[in-house]
Image 1: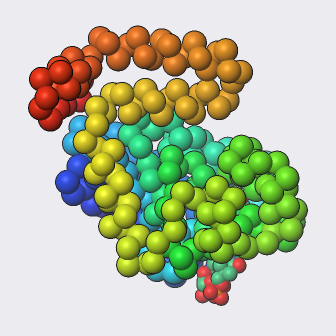
Image 2: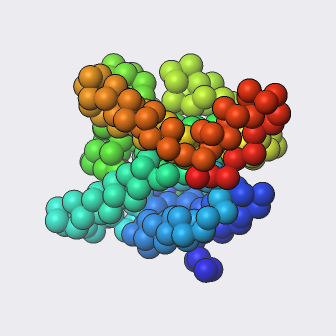
Length: 259
Ligand code: CAA
């Protein structure tokens, strides 16, 4: 399927999803969010993808929700827009396949929120992060008030959200907002190498691990441990557990089938 605001290329079992609206610094309009949802449908229905890399065309990853579109919104429309963005980002967070954000440039407002919904964030040293919404008379609306404190802690999250300050990639690394910073030309190769490394493992086990970490962060530790134990048990019903352990004992590389 062809998209107006996205380019989706699947190569070597990795889906590279590029947000392609550089004239507006990849700002998230309703149409862009709806297309992102459709791109996820397309990837989900294909069995040949182990990981997704999400990046932006041009000098921005995403410079936020579309301010021109939001300008005239009523309270009801604003709420509905927040629900739409949060729903699509939640889908990324719960996507069975790992999603890596390749943050190539500005990741502001909804752009920082989009990166935070991804499993792992790698940034170019040109990237800048921030939640500048209060300077526009609004608050983060695609779950930034919820994810940022969970990732960097309440004090730093409040500082960033209350001031609207932009931070560079090295500070984002220091506060744990990204896991690695690389020169721009190394960004996609680094993300591809990471995706390929993940793709060599048992995909069902990776999916269970993602669910256990994410859901565990949203609940008390006892419930999280119970979930982990259940998913751990389910692994033993898979062909890949037999293969992974058999390969270890037989001293040969594992050949996983994804079941
Ligand atoms: N929405 C709509 N258009 C945007 C945009 C946005 N978030 N960000 C940039 N653009 C547009 C600009 O209006 C400009 O369009 P024109 O050429 O038609 O004038 C074009 O993209 C290029 O932008 P600039 O000329 O501003 O580029 P710059 O390099 O001088 O500045 C920038 C870059 C600092 C990122 C600046 O564009 C900027 O501050 N953008 C807005 C950032 C922002 O406030 N984001 C938060 C939005 S609110 C939000 O996201 C709510 C939420 O949580 C859901």
